[in-house]
Length: 296
Ligand code: GDP
Image (cartoon, rainbow, N blue to C red):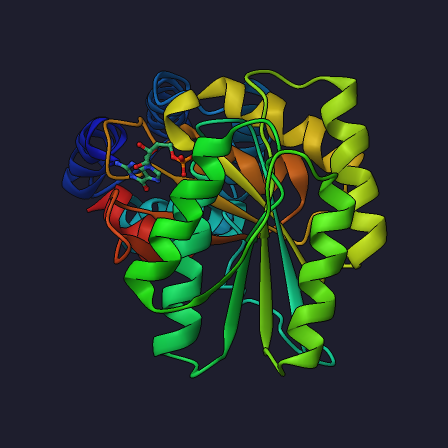
C-alpha cells in the first residue's frame, strides 16, 4: 500500500546511508526528495510543509550533522517524525462505558461503513468476547440494510431489524433499548452515506449522535480517495465529535497519503485500517510499524 512512497523514500534512504558525512546542502537535497515523495503520495500540502519544517529543524541541528553517522541519524529523524505524524501509538477502541457501548459509523457512501461494521463486530465477538448487536439506520438504501443483515448472519451476531419506512433516530433508539434489555455489550449503528457531503445528511447524523450518545464515533474513509479523504474528514470532523478514523481499502493501490494526512488534519487517531473485502480484513493501525514499512 505504500510501495510508491516507500520506493521513492527508499532511494533517499539509500543515498543517505552511503554518506559518511552530511553537509547542510546534502540535507537540503534529501529533504527536497522527501517532500516530492510525500506530495506524489497525495499527502496534503499543509501536512507536508509542517513535516518538512519539523524534520529540517532537527536535521540541521547537532543531532544529525554532528552525529558520527549523520545519514543514519537523518533517517532516524524522518522515521520518528513520520510515526509522530500518524499518531505515535495505536489507539484502541474505547468501550469503557456502561453497556451497551454504542459505536456510530459515519462516512460517505461506498467508504466501507457496512463492511467495517461487520469487521468490527467480528473482532469484538471473537477477540473481546463481546455480545454485539448490529443495526442499520440507512433508510435510503434497502440493499444496505440487507447487506448488514447478511453480514450479521455470517458472523452469527444479532441483527436488529429496520426498514425504510422508519426514521433513523427511531431505529437507533429502538435498537439501543433492545440492546439494554438483552444485555448486549456493544451496539454498532451503521448509517446512511451520500455520494457527497450535504447538509441534510450531516443534520441527520448529528441528530443520531445526540439521541444515542455513542462512546465511539468512527469516521470511515476510503484511502483511495487521496486528497479528497482529507476534505471529507475535515467536514465530518466539523459536524461530529469524532473519536477515531478507519481508513479502508489500504490493500488497494492507494498511495498512502491519506494515512499520513488524516491524523494531522483531524487531530483524531486512526484506529483501524481496512485491508480487504473479507470480514478478516481489518487491522489495528500502528503508526510505528507503518513508518518502518514506508522507510524499509
Ligand atoms: P458503505 O456504503 O460505506 O457502507 O460501504 P460498503 O461497506 O458497502 O463498501 C463499499 C465497497 O468497498 C464494497 O464493495 C466493499 O467490499 C468494499 N470495501 C470495504 N472495505 C474494504 C477494504 O478495506 N478493502 C477493499 N479492497 N474493499 C473494501
